Image 1 (tube, helix red, strand yellow):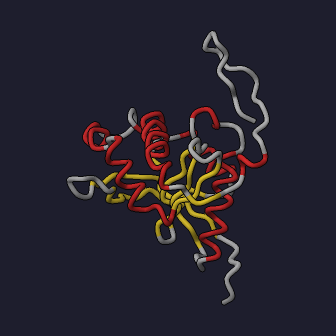
Image 2: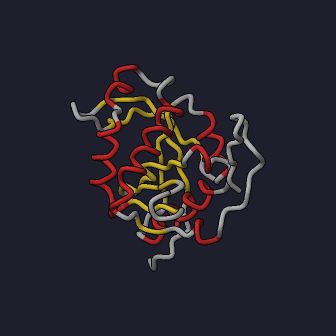
Length: 183
């Protein structure tokens, strides 16, 4: 289901997404700009008010585009080519990034991306996957817990920035995966 904005700015009831829209796929290189904007906007919504101002200053749209371009082989998306609805990015045994466009929130898109990311991690032999969640990002924390992840601990992670690592205390979520990988 996809919420459609009404002309007066209110949202109309969700409408079904076409089945072809929900197919997980690699990112087409032409979509990097669109996905970087989606990531930037989602990051601003979820993090700008709860992280140190110095980190927020470093999170620019060009930087999101650079990071996305560098990680393209580890990123999958869904939605029409040219109009992706979200993406998931892996980094080793970590579900490194998961973002959904504002209009696709609450439609099941995040669950589809999460399931695909978990399957990819499991297929690569990861037994316990992890992800970092900004302390205070309650919407994301609720989604992770609903998806079977558990809060393992609070830890300081060095986040990537153009000026070098930026240490930020995060909630570390973990999930034991079922591997499709032979032992």
